[in-house]
Amino acid sequence: MTARNFAVASLLLIGSATAAVAQPLPPQAPPPPPVANQSGTGIQGTVARLLPTPHGEVDGLLLEDGRIVRFPPHLSAALLGVVGQGDAVVVDGMQAGFGNDIRAWRITNRSTGRFVTDAPPPPPGPRAWSERDMRVSGVVRRALTGGRGETNGVILDDGTVVRFPPHVGEAFATLVVPGARLVAQGYGLSGPAGTAIEAVALGSSERDLMAVDRRGR
Image (cartoon, rainbow, N blue to C red; front, side, top):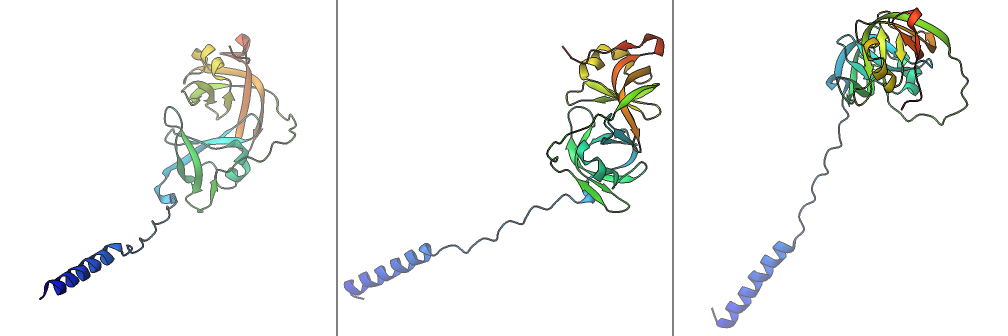
């Protein structure tokens, strides 16, 4: 091979190698879409009680194992159309604050397969005051807590829910612990989901009812 032919052959090889490097890589397959958490992978339990609010709504469930499931109260009608006391449910959600409370984004009835999913609330509209003056009493079975573990309500032995601000729970700490006898005066409602009041006075008996300071510190 002459020097000229060798040079031409070398240039052809270099050109072929460059063309091979310059070729675009084959397109990669797109990643699979995220799979929604199916009902079979959530937290399973049985509804011991619905948790009503003093406004006649429901903002959660008490499961038989003691865990509380939180759900937005503006979805009460949808929730009541899906689950009730004694129903086996699957809860998709995450831990809410301290303790074992669960903030749910979906609750599924295991028997029917029907479910309710969290959604934004509708625009606020005019609201009539429909609560009435009530007095309830019983033994505290369960304390309700907020995101920082502060006591902001209790469940009595008959299922009645008594609500109050956290600073009230701190001021009346000896009355809002499990096993304590509690009498509460306030405003609330009784309905299919149970009874709930917003307390304005608390005591261990009707004779020692004391007004609560709802303004806070």
